Image (cartoon, rainbow, N blue to C red; front, side, top):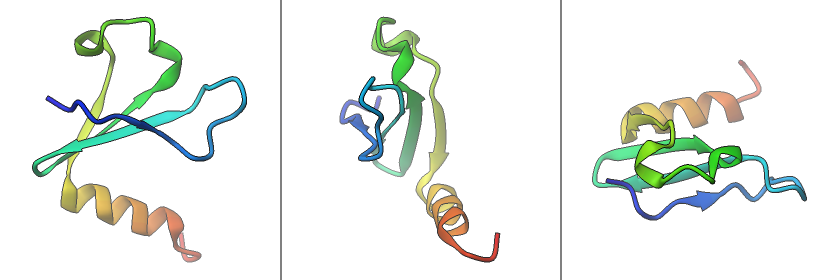
Length: 64
């Protein structure tokens, strides 16, 4: 279970953005707009660290 969630540094003033967290070899992403739900009920996308790294590399690349 991921417990170290962090909000993106690009979060708008209203706090609606993406949170990311990780544990072991798993990286998770979730929407901050659903913070009222209990943590174990919030929809979360999870990926292996390799897949998450490849995704971030691709979206930061100028050759998308």
